Length: 388
Ligand code: RFL
Image 1 (tube, helix red, strand yellow):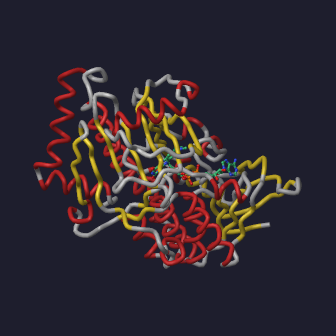
Image 2 (tube, protein in one colour):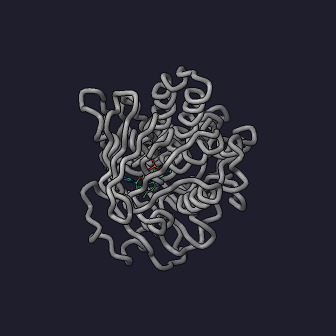
Image 3 (cartoon, protein in one colour):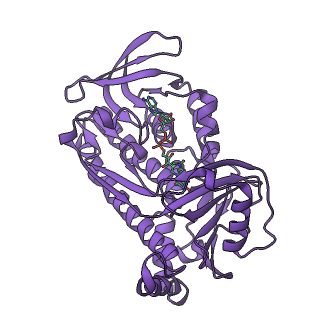
């Protein structure tokens, strides 16, 4: 069996890439370890930045993927209970993101790919990559029926997330890895609570908290916690009590909590995002904390760069964009890592003195206040929010 591009993983990165490759007339096979229903139910991110929406428009995929997804407009910062609003599209020359829960986007990417005749194989096992530094790599795997198969290809796209096999297939000496522990903990819950009027980021002496929309009747909440806090330390009563306190909303409605997890507040980047004929895409190459909402967006941006580069290499015999793939992607990755870290400091350290001391607390407050006193500062923030 053979194809032009073997895509490992059917998350936002692999599915975006596969749909783009189809539009480009490049053949691909997608291999996914989990079942279709598992992939379509995995709830994580919720905001597609303006740059991501434009990518789908450019590929003629926006109608299929984004129909009915409301625009993401005003962001509320609630500082010690006092609301402050930033109208991001107004500050970004009309550019606006879209509110689309990750599982909705993934479900539509799967349907669009399969409806167009795409080859997507769920429930595969034991994926291994071979001959990556040669001319004709192969991917071995066990299909859903238990039969061992081999797929020959021109290129492999490693879109299998942070714990996948693709990055692990690269010899250690060939990659430089950057890893950073932000030194704080986050706890997240998904609950059947209608979203606040605007995406909400709350700063107070009780600790950071946030509420983001995940569909018309669901919210994802984030709560700062001790880095070593266990899941068991957060029963439902404590969650609601802390959310009411931190959001400054004594009448916050409660609802069924459908998921609870501790978020690792860690960043990770590999350089280069390529080894021979293997290209790492999305979380396989880099992870970022949820602050700023960039993880899914980086995955889609990488997929766009790679799809264009593969089309040029396979259709026009022009390898220059493939040669530049890693450098092109890493520029955006580091820019978003910096934005995320900048926001993390601003919104955690401005709350109280315990995290970074009284001097840093005042610096963080100055950074936050500047967004509401300086239009150029607010415009720079909006520019980064929308993904440039
Ligand atoms: P994914 O989504 O992890 O998909 C990888 C896919 O590969 C499959 N796989 C394999 N397939 C075949 N063989 C193997 N050996 C395989 N190993 C794994 C997996 O089953 C899976 O289907 O990576 P991808 O596509 O790079 O997409 C990245 C995004 O999912 C991720 O960056 C975001 O979810 C991060 N993230 C957020 N991003 C945002 O932009 N905004 C947010 O608000 C946001 N919130 C979040 C998040 C991530 C979270 N978690 C759980 C990590 C909130 C949370 C809680």
